Length: 201
Length: 333
Image (cartoon, rainbow over all chains, first blue to last red; front, side, top):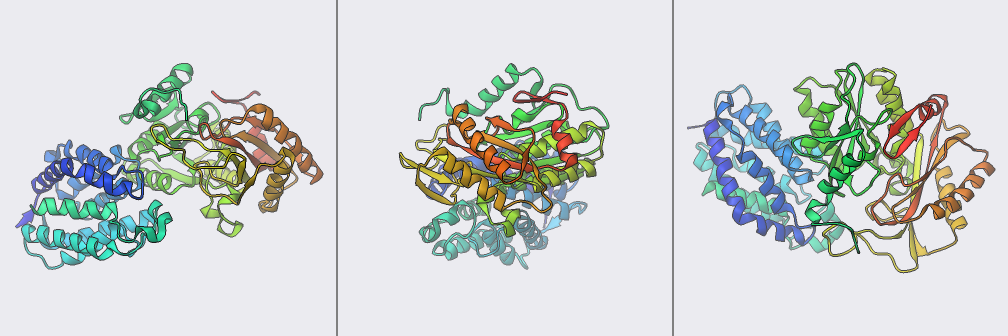
């Protein structure tokens, strides 16, 4: 079973729906350390992505690149730009392949993760969205079907959030709060957990 | 803090609408509505010079769009980076087929967004280069100059790169002069009272009634020391001493000086600082060329001042003196 442009379009639509319930949750999580706009920002970014008509996209890679371009219109925040960076990198890697299969997903998530590390300068272990993606890339190794992939990703993202909760944030604005961030969920990691849970249905 | 505004959410867009309405040489466009550019389209064959950053610093950044200066500018919300999309639009508008220099202050978010915009535009065949302003000597030591933030001194790089671009120089030459000007510019600020982001319920930072902070950043980033207010001459002396202690490699005995208000500090106080700074520089054997005193890079109602020195060589000095015109800075031939 493969992942087509239409699979990507329906995943974006589901994420867009899920953001209606998540926006406030993520804003509240961000307000503990930052300015409380993570939910609103992601809702804008995913909303813009949902407006894109992907039917003319030649292949899944091109679709991901079109989504990345849409995301860049809606954000000036670091998390939003990183998100678009990851989509663009994965799209560039997949471009030209008519379909992608579940077994390709681990590599594509890893590509996104590495591009985001290069762009943002954060490292694994800093308690950011990168740690969630790293866990997801690992969990996706060897999955056989898109359904299996969605479940594995959701579990990995939830486990990563739990594993990092009692560690300090080491980068960005949250870093200034040092050990006060222990016990507090990183809003970006929380977003990955909730969105992947929504996609796994 | 009292502000003349309507809804905080409209603060930036309404400000931009007024800015371009008051200055017919400027135009506002783009899908994002956050790109200010020259009303006249770029001359084909001219290298474009683009900047951008958060709102709340006028005349920086959008106010420097004009002949002999910037071609276009992307602008974000107050103290937030411009979106990648607006950076892309600003670069496209400034592209006269000879490539575009991205010239902006050294902040993580701005770097990410301009880098990503440039990468995406490679697909459209637009060549871009980057120079980041990092003149704030208080934000990192000389060995870590690449980590320093960009503040008021970036206007010297705007002026030099903008003037050279008008002569028809190519992208490599325009990039090189911007880099050389950044490398020869140093700034230090002193904060007297804070500012507040529209819609926020508290100031961006706090300072005691009689307290000042030497070296504080334009968004309230921590500086070098915080202590009670002292006389203007003592403050000017320390600022000049710190700048001269950080004199760039290859600097000669000629420098332009910019005494800049952070917003609320009046011209009267700037001239009191300038008077002392000038004497101190002359005593150090430095000849001042083209002094600038006024509001060039602010943080809304923040009180305080910054002093920048641009150690000129013949090339930079000539470019600073070349004609230029934007709403807040005119140099006549």
